[in-house]
Image (cartoon, rainbow, N blue to C red; front, side, top):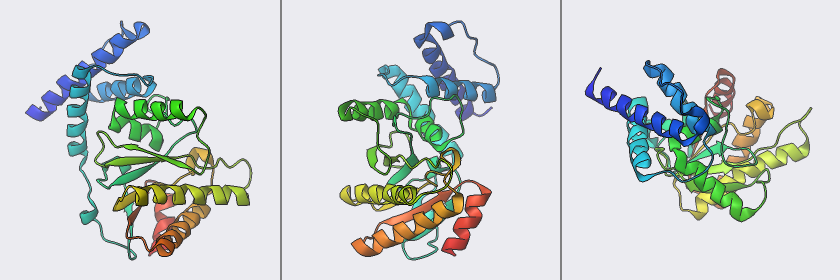
Length: 262
């Protein structure tokens, strides 16, 4: 094991011990030996942790751990990508690797992240690698707001330990049976709301995930068509210079966006 790997293991075990000790029902749990099992346990504990402050020592070690994790995964910068159309980029991979000004999170209406241990949704992924500060920041905004987040709007938070400076959180429409005109307009509103925040914060680049697809059941092709047309219309109407990266992960979305953009 390299010196870096050994240090990461020490950090990971420290974080796990802290998280286990926070909750009486977890304190007797043994830390597994393998790195893979430790990573899964750490992520699970972070996923179920409620939004609350953490100690200085914990935050320091967590931030060091997540910074090294980001380096190990490989940070992707805008300069590493080639535009497929003026101002538009297309990239397949883990959105938490992208060092844009902002990445977009497909959030739920509680806005505090996914609490399902090791769930593969983008909300879970972003909160995991941003660190516990993100959930606390989101919870603070929701307390101030006093009600769940309506679909089609957006909020902005720092990116904390992500390579991205900011995270834009938006709640897409949930499709029940068939897509309605209201569903389509709400999805378009998600993209416009995020772009408006980006303009107001003078951001130069923004990464969009495939909002409302997956467990929200918006058909992938129609969602992509709305995403591309809405972004193009906004950029043209506002004469915006924001660079937009469409981020995909699944094969289906890759094929659809490649067809729409190339």
